[in-house]
Length: 307
Image (cartoon, rainbow, N blue to C red; front, side):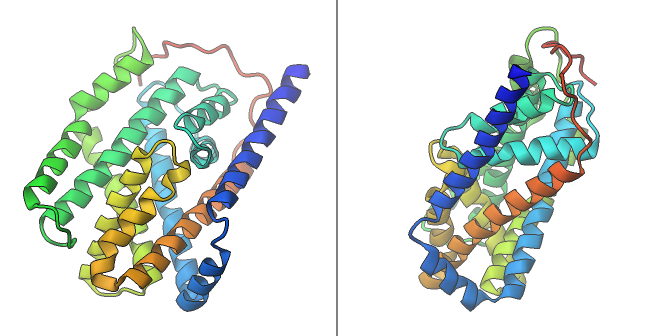
């Protein structure tokens, strides 16, 4: 009973911390946010939130697919709850809170902690470098207006493609999962994950385009590439909660030449609000519809077979 109370207190503390740091990220900017909301309008804002939630659901499905490849088959609703609630840890400064939260939540559904951490690490690798790959391709072909030479973008695209390739993903998974585990990730899995991530980046980019009221197809491509690169920049800034500052800076720099610095800054700020709203809403709904977790998790097997 004492252990259960400690775990309950830790979960409550985790939720309060994420809410507190998310609130802190907007501290002193509420007037800017209110002005941006009034200028954008509720319909565009709701559309952006809906598109962002769609993107989040895509990432949850991808995480579940990776988890299954490590021998932990979890029902969709439970996997969504583990992933979406756990990923709120990104709002706490540092780079380990999401992994720790997903591992703890996964144990309540009989997912070994090491398997959960491995799936989360592979997901982060694919999520980040698929964004770099897509954004670099769009920047190198002139969709994004930058002062960086095309060959720098080509090099970044090659690096992104290499880091999401099956040999690299398998090596990372084998290292993290431990001896006795052979991760399976082939060309078919690469095609599936890249297709899912393409849909995710399109949803996120379309949300930014909605905030800008951009209806031109070229502007949609611009928003997709800009958000993919800015999101990757935010992830790589591991000490910034949810990439705050870095993501907005890159997004403004990439959107500014086309839309103007003022509208780009407003869209970047609202994009932060939209993603925070979608994160907490999706996590709450996923937690509510998930199956009841086991009161006492089964003994963890650090060498779970690969499915």
